[in-house]
Length: 131
Image (cartoon, rainbow, N blue to C red):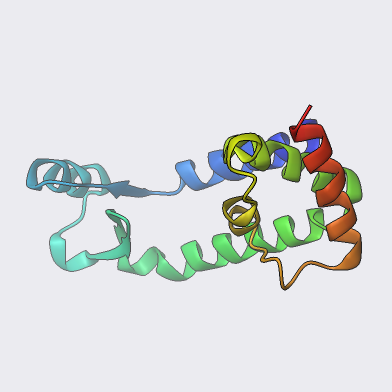
């Protein structure tokens, strides 16, 4: 799992180092504004309780696009893809549900979009998950 988890961790660190905050009540929002030294008018919501400075939105979007591009490129590596399938099948309890929908969704895939190569690797990972 070293390739998949290493990239996942690198992306997590990059995301968490971006200057933003998450708030789910007024106190957390006030603390977040103070953390960014910003006013409410200078902040934009990004969903899921996330907020950042409006002036940083383009930089954030570019970072997310780069992360997506890195992930898309990594998904062309068979070893990486196998590790990703194994990890996410376990993470989404495939061995209990025998439903790979959440696994595929977590990787930006659907059963309809899988290539023949991806289907083969997924089948191999499912055999591993059922051991």
